[in-house]
Amino acid sequence: MSGNFRGYVSLKPPIVGSEGRLVSGYSADVPPRQLSQQSFLAISRISLVFLYAIIITGSLVRLTGSGLGCADWPQCSTTKFVDVSTGHAAIEQINRLFTGIVSAAVIAAVLGSIFVSPRRKSLIWLSSALVAGVLAQVILGAIVVFTGLNPWSNMAHFLVSLALVSTAVFLVEQAGATNVDGVLAVGEKIEPTRQITRRFADLILGLCGLAIVLGTFVTGAGPHAGDENAIRLNFDLRSITRIHSATVLICITATLIFLFQIGRNASEWSRLRAKLEIFLFVAVAQGGVGYLQYFAGVPAQLVAVHVAFAVAVWISVLRLWIAARK
Image (cartoon, rainbow, N blue to C red; front, side, top):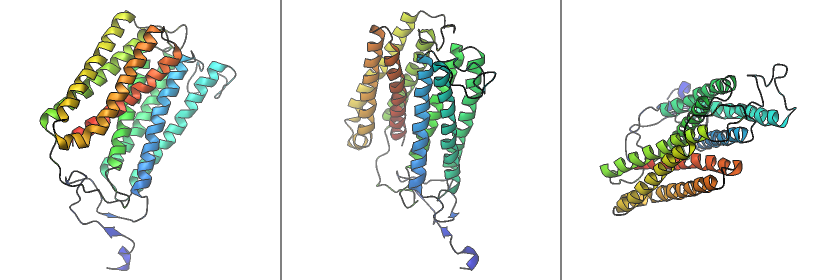
């Protein structure tokens, strides 16, 4: 081999994934030691944590009545870019500044996907989608302010945040498909997931997503608007809450049936048990918090916990769905 190629390694195709399937979308010749797969996995996880965290901080802005603490955008007020002169302004300002940290994390993920070895197109696309999503969130944030915390814009803001978390989960799962040496992991042959299992996973994911969307309607009609002058959705709060809770109960019931169904298949049980139990635990806990906050008069502290659990439920059901589709 000539000196011009010294320092490069060539991966011999075919490369197979953790389930014994061929994996496409990677570069065959890559410079070594640019960025290890272990390091990129850590970057991906950090991005996911920050995207989760900013949903929580955003909910605290609303729950403390600080939604219009900064009445202008991108600066906090007409005279100051950064304004912490009042408690509400400080809370909103901190949340906006935290967006900068989130932006840095997703940019790091994009750079990592470019320099990681071996390079894979799926990682580049997923990490780039995170950057695009954060930019969309910045624009939505401006719309939320300029519309005076219109509940429809707030709902869109939350759902886009959840889409970003979903993308980050896929990125972490993809990054975790390789071992520490940068070689796509090869697992022992296993039986393919049965069609009924995949259909149940689809159903549970859909019901969970529907419950979360309905939850945003409950929030839009509820008492915590982010500002005392913000408009609310013209829905009967008790009725929309009952529909939301009924969807949650149907989702949990379907999950229990799913648990019994895969328990009769040793291969699927060993692969899905842990993720299924985690999802079921988080979902039941979330339902418990939901009922507690309703009968306690919807205190802001419990609403914050409910929001945090909602995101945890979505992450856990998405990881279950990914595992069931393999």
